[in-house]
Length: 211
Length: 361
Ligand code: B12
Image (cartoon, rainbow over all chains, first blue to last red):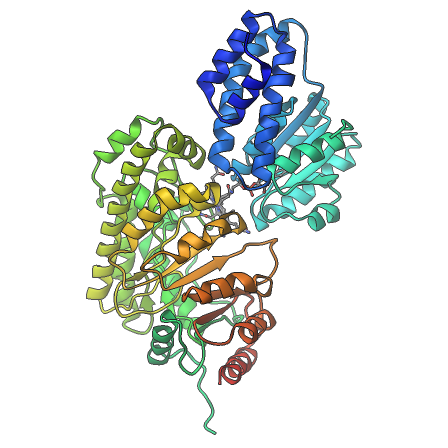
């Protein structure tokens, strides 16, 4: 039987064929799907997040790792669902109204998935109402807002205001190239991260899980 | 002492840019600045049904530019020119990509849907007979005629190399393709770069035949082929990919140029600065640090690195104080100052230009 650490290495290296094969072998040998996710795949994405944070790898390497994980999850998700196992935390993510940039947002979404959050991705050009409706519907622990344009930073501010005014307990995280910690504080967001690796650490802290 | 004239003068500005490209200075560095208009220009009103109609209406674009240019006297070295524009993805449209128009920009719809589609792309010659290219040509002809030498016509924005591919495929899928079949993507890029050069050649010849100088959205001047090599895709990739893939493509695209200024976009692209500075045909760097990343004064190290590598720099200063601070720190050689915030009035603009003169003595 392969070791979970081999699966971790395969995900981190973005080797999708190996990732799928190892997942199948682990399942065949009787490993629990939840263990495969939490002890095999998730640590792989954590390695990738750390490397990205330190500028050791860049977007293509992140994307291949996420693709490998996604293929493995296709095998695992039906098994997890039938066993009634769900990720502990739910996050909503999207790019704010007027903004179509989504590469950064997609990386955050992948890394949160990689950290075993259930992630509902609302896409780009998302209105405040849409975030609010989704946060309510999914009882989200976390809402992530991305903005890449100075012209859409006001939309981010409005969205935070509307989400806060609704009185939900959901934590709000913001990010994107022109966003700073100072801006995040000014608009009343609960967290900010400059990159996808840090975004996982902060998200875990915000939802109360040990980082 | 005779009072200096700070209105734009083609001869004086050309001479300043000539020196700047070579890392030197004449009387002072070139300066781009704007003055807030006192009264709004009486520009033609748009009655277009769609944004697309407005963007592609050559007559409307030229008349709007004419109204704006006649209304706003140019100061310093800011070339009073019309920039024929349908957005940066013009070269992608030569391969069948359709543009989607927003209020102030456009982007293109993807036509390469899977890795294997690149072979089809490589077999496709660029088609200059498309509505976007035709609109650009029409704008150039109309403007040259309408301006009668009073204002200039600039070259359009042409994204090159991997930005052309990203326009056709989407940047994320292009990242994956680069890992899945790097050599295929490299061949695709070489094809894209050839189309880019052909596009440049056509524009250059057309404008030169109409007696226009060589300038573009970045308002330098040069009497000969000059352009702004760039690759926004750089911010997504490693140094290795920058070196192995992007550098050769940019070299291909700069080979016929006499003068070049690299547009380096965003802190996430800064790890490629070394590669950029080693480009053999590069004269200058336009470093765009972007919103949320401070002022030009916060990036002196980057400017110094460029200057030490023998390249000129364009400084995107926020305001006069920011520009003067950088000028004091770097000295006037090989420096071009652009002041982003418009001056309140002509007096303030000329006072600033005087100060630049004094600091450059
Ligand atoms: C790729 C790109 C595009 C692509 C977008 C493709 C796509 N699917 O996203 C296209 C060509 C479509 C595009 C269009 C436009 N763009 Co653009 N684009 C870029 C570019 C080159 C890279 C952005 C990017 O993807 N970076 C890589 C990712 C990984 O980084 P990131 O998004 O910053 O994300 C990281 C962090 O910020 C953070 N993060 C991001 N989101 C979130 C969210 C949360 C919750 C958290 C915690 C963290 C987080 O983590 C991420 C991973 O580390 C930048 C220039 C640059 N160098 O940054 C310009 C840039 C952002 N674009 C710009 C502009 C002006 C435009 C246009 C208006 C005009 C144009 N034609 O270029 C249009 C706008 C369309 C619209 N309405 O949105 C400007 C913005 C200027 C400003 N400050 O307002 C920039 C800065 C270019 C420039 N220097 O002028 N663009």
